[in-house]
Length: 111
Length: 115
Image 1: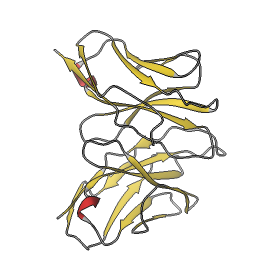
Image 2: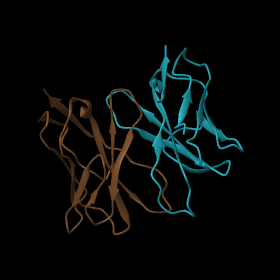
Image 3: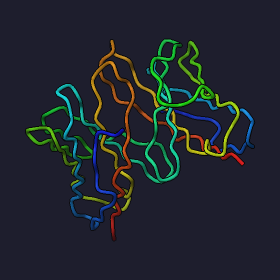
Image 4: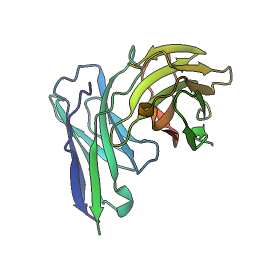
């Protein structure tokens, strides 16, 4: 079973920040939070990951709460091409090699 | 630098037949995982291959089997196809770094339709 809970869908205006929440209340100390997105019928695309510190790359920012029970993926200036299903995943660093996907959040960026 | 490639792109089979799907990992990667994604669902882990051995398996029957070659490419075989096997099959590659974390990179998938 997935260890994460995400809202099924969200809308965001083009050019505005998209904030996608994820709850992972049972996360363990050695489990990373990963975010992937999947544009219609393509393979999932890696976005970002983190353990306990906030992370930023060229695609997005990841904010993890101090208790690590939730996180938020931020797309700072959403474009129409960001319309996709976004998956939040938790995974241990070793011993378990699989990702357990939930049903994700379907983000629709509106013109 | 080529990413993960999969073949074929689409495939149509009938119930009871057997199918083989192929995957070439991203350059420099040595580990291949396979996932099944039914329509409207998130991907489900089938198994992972490393050093030509199945290292971990998800909750899939023995009809699903795989292989990894010395060049790290991999095959997924499904025997006795059922209608419920219709799905997008995704291959993901990664670099095993002594058992520690490394993100997986996914291919575009093979769309299997069973009639």
